[in-house]
Amino acid sequence: MSSSLPSVSSEPSLMQSAEPPSPEMSAIRRILRAILTALLSLIIIAGAASPFVAVQYQKHVFAERVHTYLIQQKHYTADELSSVKGIWGMMLPAFYVEVIFKDEPERVYTYFAHGEVTLMSHRLIHSTDPIDVNETDTSKGAVPKHLE
Image (cartoon, rainbow, N blue to C red; front, side, top):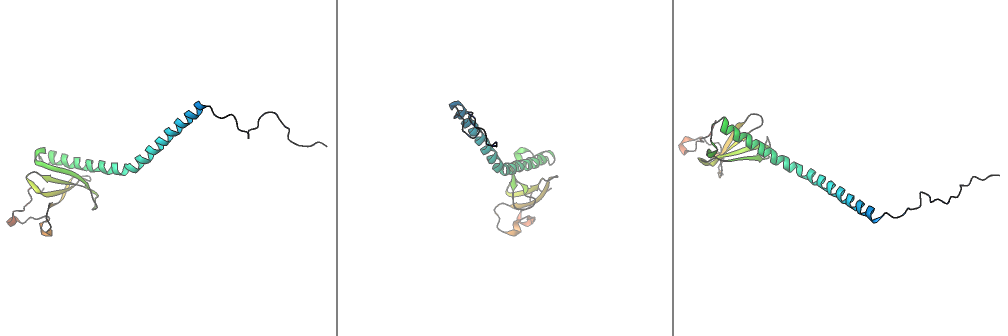
């Protein structure tokens, strides 16, 4: 009767551990692991920062559209503009631009630049009286100077 036992070989099997890696290989593995960890960290940080960067970019784009509109189409000079600031707010649309003119520093004009640039409103900066918002009463001398 022949038995079907596995033959015993003098060669090492795959289950036995081979020689430990050389110090050069260990150093290369540590360097590769450090590089991969750094790349993964950068990807995570970039992913977390991308919404913030996108908002800042959009604010800049809308402010630039309104600034260009005021200078090229409404023929204001850069010296007449005190502030052109892109805003990300809670009202819709979420992005709008607030403009303050040098000759009217107490009034803020709100422009939307989604597609066509449009003046949406104006208000006094430090007003607590709702009547002062979009005030056009000439007896008070509060007529906005920069309405379209």
